[in-house]
Amino acid sequence: MKTTQLVLISALCFTQAHALTLPRQPVKSYECDVCSQLSHENLQDKWSISNEPLNRTINNSQKSYGYKERISLEQLRAGVLITTTAPGAVVRITPMQNKLIPQLKIKTPKNQLLSLQEASALFSQDEPFGDKTLSTKHQTMLQIKPELGFGTFILKSEEHSSNDADAYLINVYDKFSPTYLDVQTDSIHYQYGDKLTAKITLVDDYIDHDIYDINASLIGPGGQYVPLKLSKVKKNQFEATTVLNSESNDHGENWYLETNIQSEYGQQLIRRSGHTAFSYSVPSASMISVKKLSSKPLTFVATLDVATASRYALQSVLYRKNGKGEVTPIETSQRAQWLEPGKQVIQFTFDNSNQLADDSLYLGYLRLIDYGQLKTVYQYNQPIKLTQLVE
Image (cartoon, rainbow, N blue to C red; front, side, top):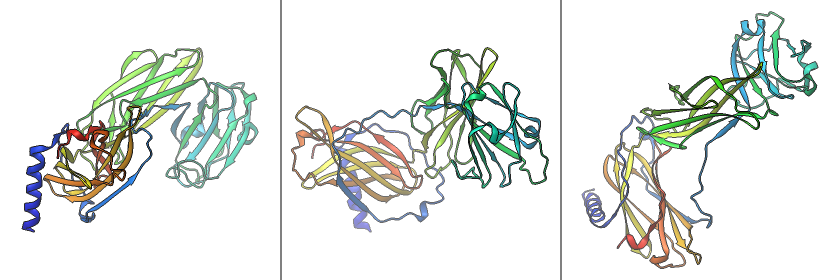
C-alpha cells in the first residue's frame, strides 16, 4: 500500500512539474447515495473511430405546435375550450387515474354538437400511445375532421359517474398550423453555479404575434421547481436568466425548461406549451493538467482535483492532421477507476497502430464522467498538439 502511494505521489509531482495546464473549474462535493456501491476496479479500453469531426454544434431548440392543460372533472363537465389555428388538429385526453373516460361531446366553432367519433377523421380509444409514465389503460385520441374548421371547440362530458377520474391531461397538437413556439436554452450542459439563459419565441410563417400571457420554469427530476423571471425582448419573444444552484444528485436524468404562452390574432386565441431538456451536474471533479509519458505505447497522465469520492472515467480522443490540414479523430480511449477526494492522477493509453509522428497528432475531446451522477463533470474540447505535451 505504501509503495502504491509513493508511486502516485511521484507521478503527481512529475506531472505537475512538466504538464500542460488545462482550464480549471471550482469543484464541489455532493451527497452520493450510490457511490459506495460502485466498482473500485481499474478498467482501460481503446478503439478506432470514424474520421468524422466531433465538433458539430448541437442546438437544443425545440418547436411546439400544440399545448397541454390539466383539467379537473368539474371543468370537463362544465366544458373545456380547445383552441386551434388550422383544420385537422389532434386532441388527446388522458385520465390522471387509471379510470374510464366518460362519454364526451364536442361543440364546433359553428355550434354543431357531435360525439367524438362523429367529429373524428381518425379515432383511437384505450390504445397505448406516447409517454408510458403518464399513460393509463384508458385514453382517447382523435384528429378533428378538417371540414369542421378551426377556432374554438368545446369538449364536454354530459354523463356523471362515480367511476370518472378526478383529473385529466388534455394535449392539443395543432399539426397544420403555421404558428409554433420555439423554446431553447443557451447550452445543453450546465453545472452548479452556471448562468442559464432561456429564450422563448412565438413564430409564425406570416404574422408577428404579440405574446400577452407567459410563464416559464425549470423542472428538475427530483421535483425541483424554479420559476423564471421573464423579460420581453420584442412582442413575440421573451428571455430569462437564472443561476443554477441545485446540489442534488440527479442520477443521470435531465432537467427541463417548460413554458406556456397565450396570444391572439383577431378573435382567435393562440395557445402553445413547449419544453426543452438540458443536462445538469455538480462539478465533483476537475482536470488540472495532462502530460505525455511515452510514445510506445502512446501514454498520457492527467492530474485531477476530486471533491467527491466516486468512480470516474476519463474519455479522450486522438486526432491526426490529414493532407488538407484538417484535424480528424482516429482513436478514442477510456480509463475508469475509483478516486478519493484530493489531487489524483489517471493514466491512459492509445494504440497509435500506424505509429504516426507527434507533429501530426493531437489529443482532445477530454471528458471526465462521474459514475455517481452518471454525468460529465468536466470537458475540454480543443485539440492539443502532442508536441506541447513534452515527454
